[in-house]
Length: 286
Image (cartoon, rainbow, N blue to C red):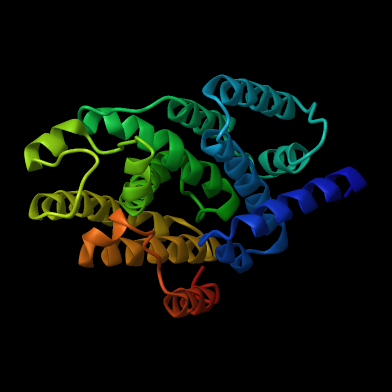
């Protein structure tokens, strides 16, 4: 390993540590090469998302994203100048990550630069696929699949998993997004349940949340097949991530009003139990 690559991987680890994500403990389940690749991918996704979350004017954020996209393309050509892109280039090359999934995430963040409005579920799904499903699709080559499993086999359950995770995120952040003037729920659903925006706690609001929880649960069910397609450590990582997010969804379902005033979280003891279960899974059948 060159000193420059080592420095890039160290920068990626710093991004992961600072993020304090529920997902990152799952990286410990992976052998070192996979862990390094996942750290690089996560750092790329985190930095990309940070552009949308920046308080800077839209024009400046758009310029930042344009430069970030140019850096990605340089990285993919083998011209990464430094920063996290050297580690990202190494991960893409080593594990055969489809770069189109990285581009899709940038396209999703670009959508977030402007106020979004989705009239129907059919309009929302492409956004979910860009900002979430593409993340999982990029990670699958790193996690690894069983012999004989193809991209065509993993595509549908991986997309379902991303949609389930992002639907859960949307519900978790609903109050915060509403205060920021954002709405990621289809207008047709707001009208169907009679919920004004920004929402307040009411029977109509709780019915709307129940509807969205049901959609997410369907996606979680559709994503279950992915676990059986992954190799042992990949299955453990996916199981941990899915377990944490499904627990989060169920906490939201139990108390919908909580999302209007705070960020609902999965308790640490629950996360530790899921992590322990995942560690055991790494020793299970291949």
